[in-house]
Image (cartoon, rainbow, N blue to C red; front, side, top):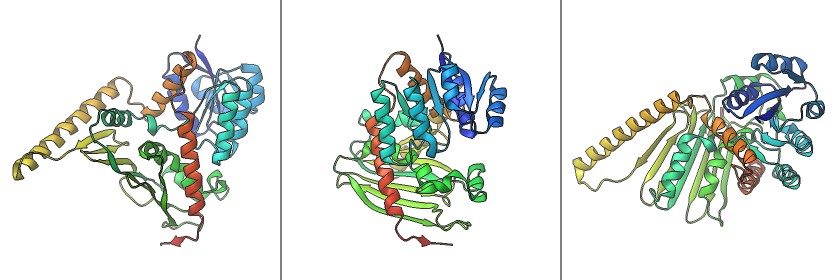
Length: 358
């Protein structure tokens, strides 16, 4: 029997989830819910879904879904996830899981108590090139991680950014940390695995660089954390270009570079050849890896990995398999809690008096 799926929140994120769900052979969307009835009705019409609801409790009673995808603003995640879990549903929650680490912990504990499975929408964590990087590092390709740099270049002129700047009542303005909290999961989820146990936050600097009507809407963030063994630097920037997500890992043997927007993965290592021959060999390796990235991306496109958010499709598939086969969830709860705790710490330190650069 296909898994019966319900979606709560019928905005842009729900569209991405619907496409990912519909790409799964063993799942079917049976209902959607939104506090605005017209949103739910239009979503259901677009995706051929019969059950349109304004109230989650009614949806749960009448449709009895196996899985609920929560794609609403973070302020509602806790209550909605708890209701779905208590009704016996497994839950997929968009990031951030909650408004605080304490609230995230409550959701996870509820899932454990009710023996339901839970995951979070860390789509970049499941990107093909990120998995490729993990496999390469696990084989020892880079040696020991010495320094890691993660960058998210964000477009305030994009559709979401424009909405935040144009609407004083947009839900982002009601988040503690605003843009930073809404995006920091993406960066931290990729780097936490590199941090030794004795790591700590070394420095946090956040400020407003773009002109906007909201003095407290910080749009630039730099975070340094780690230990003597490994240093991690995180950059969230609305000025850096090109737009996208980038990850560089400097190792004791070699370096890896990821461009998640363009799905490229490159390993750089020193040549053992002298002078000009070494430079030539390095260039040839770069050309070879560029060709390999081209072939891999072309293959993924043919095999429908061309879906705009391949990490989301893969995460949905892994989550559903964990439900059907009673396997471990694709993202360990300990990892989610570690990221949530670090986000809280960064936001707390970002609340110090800020520098405004205009």
